[in-house]
Image 1: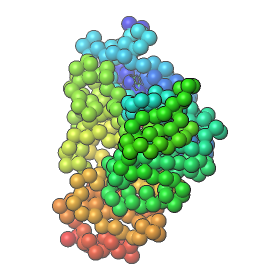
Image 2: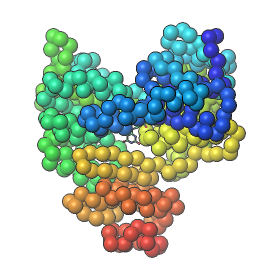
Image 3: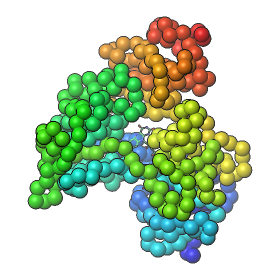
Length: 411
Ligand code: FAD
């Protein structure tokens, strides 16, 4: 075995980097390696579909820490290393280069890979996923020769990319299978609001539309996307934003319990001894989803699970119970969400969507479970406490923007 670390963190993204930082903050004195298959130091992923794609923030400004930080904290940053195999008994991993690295404890923080389409022409070079700097650098390089873009998937990432590319003067079409955008994450009012915003900015949105295949040319480039109804949308660039597949292969092969992601308990421990999983790849029971076993894909979840794993390693009593929050920027709209709206049975619209400053408050069994706040940071900040406490509040007052959320009467 070439090397051994007390803590080996596999995946140098948001969760992995935060785990290393948290361990040192907790005065962990053993050896730590932060190992990732990308060739760059850890960086923020959210700007990839926002300021980085727009050319408004260079890479240096989206790095999670300056490059010197890791060495100064005695964290060995091992870039360009893909873990292919985990041996939970021998406590070592094997890299795709065949190199072996031993560990005392392993933190698996590998995120996910973009789910891509599997149909005729789907391997064309100008069909892009949006997950890494490399993905977005390829898109940026192709922008000067691109006039038309088709975005497949009307989720946050697809819509953010659509907003940026429209701002850059591209003609964008969004293809969505379901009958509204953001259907997986938001209620109908918010979906219709964003749909209308994009249309007003010139984006074409095709709902209830299934991709059948890509038409390609002799150079291996897609020239158009054909839908199941026979219509063809020609473009020079295609972006697929239809979710991720958690990167769990080596850990599952090693015997870790898994379904949609690696299963972890409230301490982020997997079913394998001394092996933790955190971030987008980890499925956990979430208090804000009525205890359902879910994966969250957010910076909040990555950072908070990283802290829990670090504290558990340090022998501190700590459970993952953090409130979910998320944001998305499209045009001049700042969406902030708190809580999980899935399963709501009622909602209140607070403010007028046409004013482009409003909130949607989701309730279940009379209790506020989530808020989507558009350009309404005050509601988001105050709503957070309400969701955390699971309060039942007067509906009429909730809709009244004259009454601050924190002053609304309980019922
Ligand atoms: P990642 O950050 O993906 O890190 C995982 C790392 O592990 C990657 O570098 C990967 O290459 C590496 N890896 C995978 N397999 C292996 C292996 N076998 N060996 C070694 N290394 C491996 N969240 C928000 O809260 N707000 C936003 O606005 C937002 N916008 C987003 C926009 C985009 C374009 C994307 C892609 C994500 C966005 N997210 C946003 C989600 C957020 O970035 C993720 O939830 C977060 O990055 C998850 O962190 P992670 O460490 O689990 O995974």
